[in-house]
Amino acid sequence: MSLIMKFSVLQILGLLILDGLLHCQGLARHTFVVKDVPYTRLCSTKNILTINGQFPGPTLHVNKGDTIVVDVLNKGNYNITIHWHGVKQPRYPWSDGPEYITQCPIQPGQKFSQKIIFSSEEGTLWWHAHSDWTRATVYGAIIIHPKKGTSYPFPNPHAEVPIILGEWWKKDIMELYHEFLASGGDPNVSDAYTINGQPGDLYPCSKSETFKLMVDYGKTYLLRIINAALQDILFFAIAKHNITVVGTDASYTKPLKTDYIAISPGQTIDVLLEANQALGDYYMAAKVYSSANGVDYDNTTTTAIVHYNQNYNASSRPQLPNLPSYNDTNASANFTGSLRSLADDNHPVHVPLNISTQLMFTASVNSFPCSTNSCQGPNGSRLAASMNNISFVLPPIDILQAYYNHISGVYGDQFPSFPPFIFNFTAEDLPLALETPKRDTEVKVLEYNSTVELVLQGTNLLAGTDHPMHIHGYSFYVVGWGFGNFDKDKDPLRYNLVDPPLQNTIAIPKNGWATIRFKADNPGVWFMHCHLERHLSWGMDMTFIVKNGSNPEAQLLPPPSDMPPC
Image (cartoon, rainbow, N blue to C red; front, side):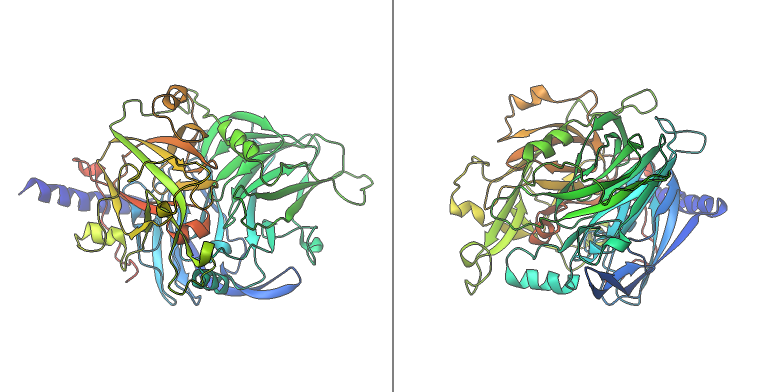
């Protein structure tokens, strides 16, 4: 028997044994029914896509290291996929969820059973749709509790509460999406931001349904904050209260006391709230951070109420927190740059020190010529986006299927390791010739167990702005960041290699850079993209393929039998 055949047999036996063990242990199973349900917000009613009729969707509770199955049944009118944001899914990208990357979409009337494998994550993650803009209303929290017999690295809170920040449009989201694609311009801004699905007191027809957090004086509450907004980084604060950050992206941090946070789409931040103020009502609030010049933004503020339970005479209106200005880039970058891994004996860091693979990717807003010169981009062009000057094109079948089954012609493997054009990335006036990228479906192939340093460089092409970048299948250490062009000789001298935060989503600051490090020890096909939905739709995305290792335990597991057809 050949060595390759032995590995294949061992792989299959390993999967059968794993499935058998999971069956014996009574694998937890959940049902997600995708369906349209009427919801009323801002004085009008529309049908929205939901899971089990809920908005936001159901919260999943697991313990660290659990495996669960979620049966997704699509009773809606559109194709859909579900992504488990921040779950590494070791060796099993088949259930990761991005359409045409790891699966073809679940078509109306079809079902897909997704096995979700948790490993080192502990804290807060979330799930959301990953097909077109359906995640506008299809999302929910994932709470990963410590393993049984272990505890939090901080005193147990009195209660734990998901706080999910989102956006709401009066218009049907798919109608908005198709108009956006046809126009070639920016999408319409949202009509409201939301906290746990509710806009809050400051919007019309919203006061009676405003979310309320009921607290007792002297007790501490763990708020699990998730930014599920489609298009915007958000500032969040609670009036008269400091909060203490204790985790981000399902990884613990050193306690950071602050009076506000900046949170990117896709990111989660765990904070402790001590109810230590005078009895009364206080607003928690969120509003946009928008750094791009000349780009419209939703300038409204969503609120919820922190209500002390004891008897007192309530004032006529709760107090609002002081939030940074909508364009305060320093406030956003300085908060994110203050995060540090906990890095104690029970939560060690493993920052790669000897780098085998050096990469640098630019993130740019671009444009394509419009056939009629009547598109809504600059000078009648069609807006686009790119990484390393490639505007990503989704293939007709998923890349994972093509890779696993050796189907040629679906993707190329020549994604550049460095920008094809070196220029002053953050200069004020850049040549027009740089604005037009190449359309392609290219992947970057990584060797198994390679140690990767990736510099993410923002550019000022068309519109310099922040880019919250997310990598599927991995968490990474954010070892450095700064404004302007990355300096390969000076900037690495300032890297934090002792206790950098471990994240799955990091915002490249406006006209700046961020450096991440990770070990490519999870074989498979893994998507990377900007989590501003318009940028993803324009092509600011790419795909990693991490090759198999030599041992069976370091190889991609076989697919399930019910993968959605293409």
